Length: 282
Ligand SMILES: Nc1ncnc2c1ncn2[C@@H]1O[C@H](COP(=O)(O)OP(=O)(O)OP(=O)(O)O)[C@@H](O)[C@H]1O
Ligand SMILES: [Mg+2]
View: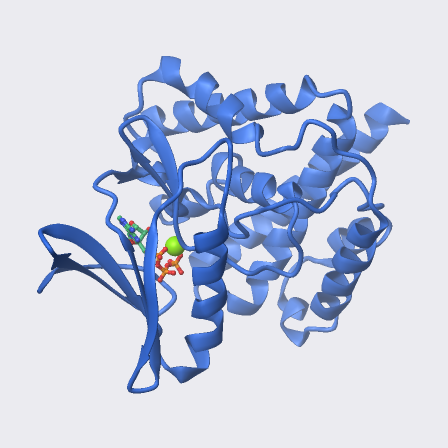
């Protein structure tokens, strides 16, 4: 029995249904062309194991009338994006530390990362839709970057604060993505896309002070945790280059003036951060 519907942006139908007295979520692809992607999402969620985040249980995957769907447990909690508006300030540094523990303790350089990132960059650079954005400095920076510290590791693939659900003090993950490459760097950059660049909150204009303070505190605690690592400088540079790449990857999907303005500002901000970092280390 369907109880209520949830809202996402992918076009999938998300409904909460009652099954044997329990609430479960059914995620159904918008059409046949989305079936494979939903299957990869289901497999990634099903196989996900992490010392940091809790698992959202998946149940079955089926295809009915050409549309794929899978079911999972319903988490009666709050998305991280919403929870951060009112979270007790003293809890935030702990949260930042927990989030940064997705970085494996023993990262080392890995040549595969360079080929994966460079291929992604080249396909993006060839996209005509880049023309309307101030991308030349950004591409110049990214082309010259050595991505080898972005070693391969298990990763969610789209770790926005909307895809993290806080329930009973635990963080659960949903909406996994089979991305071009699996690395901790992809997940850390996605978390900073919300914490530092305010991606989720971009339509709100000037942020409410309570939220702005919490985001700043979270970002600072994330950066402090990165800074404590032996390879802290390399991690920082890898993550901020990945963040710049993420912003460019949004361009082909940009449909409105607020997002365009957000992208323009973030490119300038990130190129500036990376310029300053280079100046400091030279
Ligand atoms: N298992 C769940 N338990 C509780 N809430 C959920 C669950 N799955 C999804 N939601 C809610 O529905 C929202 C959209 O879900 P999801 O991210 O899977 O959809 P989507 O269409 O892929 O979204 P988008 O493309 O916007 O990320 C989530 O942000 C969350 O608020
Ligand atoms: Mg989502």
